[in-house]
Length: 294
Image (cartoon, rainbow, N blue to C red; front, side, top):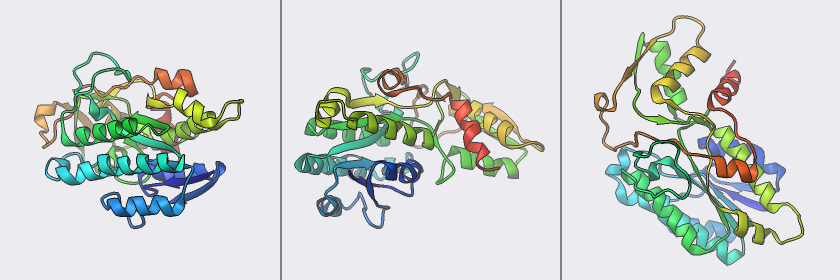
C-alpha cells in the first residue's frame, strides 16, 4: 500500500513516519514539499503520488493567531482537507484526518462523545470542524480522529514548555480550571496504525466496505483527566528530582488569551476502544514519554 503522509515533522507526523513503513511504501512531506496553504500544490502532489491512503496530521494549530489569520486557518484546516477528500475519492483511496476537542464549547459535564453537538468557541475550532464536515460530505472512506492536549518529544508543545520553564523559574503559574486529557503523540500514532490495520485486514469482505462500515468519526485520547495545572505538576514531578519549581494554580481569567478555550476538553474514547483496542492512561503514557529523555 502506498501511503501519503503530510506534516512529517510535526508531533503526530513524526511518530507516524516511524511506524507507517511497516504498512507499505510511505511518501512523506513537510511544509516545503506539500504546503497546505497552497491548494494547487496539494492537489498536484496527490495526483503525482497516487496513494492508496492519505494520512493528514498537518494543520494550522496557532490557536490565538488564528483569530487574526482566519482565512489562512480555514484554507489549511478546511479547504486543503476538502481537496484531499476529493482526490482520494477520485483515486479510490482512503483518508485519515485529525481533528480536535476545540470543536466543542466545554459546557458539558463529563466526557464528550462523537454524537454530541459541536459548538466551537474560536476560529481554530471552527476551521477544524469545517474540515471534518467537508470530508464527511465527500463520501470518501475515512477516519476522522479527534484528539486533545497533544504533546511529545518533538515540536512545540506544553510538555516542552513546562520543562524549559521549570529549569529557569522557581514558580509556574498554570491554569487549573480547564480540564482535558494529555495525549502523547506516539499514543495517537500507534492507535492510528492499529485502526488502519484493522480496517485493511483480510476478513473476506473488501477493505473499502470495512472503511465505510467501521470508519467515520472517533475520539482518540489517552484515558483519564486532569487540568493544565495537574499536567504541569505531573511533568515537574516525573522529570525533576530536585530544585522543583512550585506549581501554582490560577484561573482562566488570570491568564487571558485572544482565543477562548473550552473549560471541559475531555473526550470519551470508548467507541474507539470498543472498535480498535485499549488506550493507555495519560499519566502512564507521560511516564513512558519522559523515560525516553533519560
